[in-house]
Length: 367
Image (cartoon, rainbow, N blue to C red; front, side, top):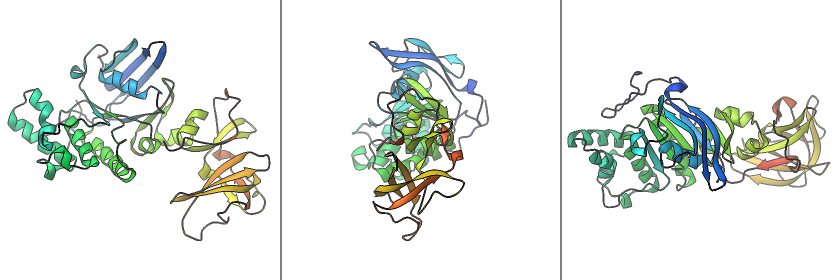
């Protein structure tokens, strides 16, 4: 066992500093079918002990099904699931050393906060004094110590989310599975809870496997991100790598907004923040074209410009709103501009299998 990373009295953990992948979760050839449809299609995956790992993808991509397979709520049709070197493929959820936090927090409305957190320990017949000690530590960790006497109906959405998290971590699982737990919260609260979840995960040091369709959550919190598509992992890596060097056009379009352009070496992805807008001609040493702004969207921290180029295609650029007078281009449709970029900022794409995809910006919308 490694050294204890848990720093909250009453909550112990055997999780030490980052250990080998073999000491974490291993999936080999995992397949889950519903009828003729493979919801999970031959997934191989290793998650390191103590890692904050996120499965990101659109609805129907297989990420939630895979989470349920790891939890034991579903059984794979093929493949194996191992935890710390032991095959748990056929074990029920309560024998796997994992806990799950869902978007629906499922708190008992007639219990107090403290009783909700203690419920799992009561079922396991943990002595009352030990329960009280661990409940206090868990509530302190999620900053809910003063609200232990309240009922769920007296809490905000964010507070109920914290109670559900405390209820999960108080049982000291080796792995915590989180299935879009922030989906019901408003934007500001969701952003606050992203920071809190990361803080708590670092503090207790257990493995978090997080499912979301929200790219901001994935990029903000994760050590690594797996982007799912049609039951398979399209790309796996640290958040910056997935964003800056997307392996496929799907990843480029789903994780953020992208321009797909033609280069001398084939199709490439160009992020809008890499695109510059200037008056006049394309600056020397840069690649680009002239065009006309057809749309301007003020987004708070940035302004997004859509530019129609001479060949009829469009490209998207964003500019930070550093001050009310910043910029060299008037932010209004109809302005003639030069659009330029460095070829070093255009990352080549591996898949060119879809000839119907138009060169230009792709955006995953409000995900």
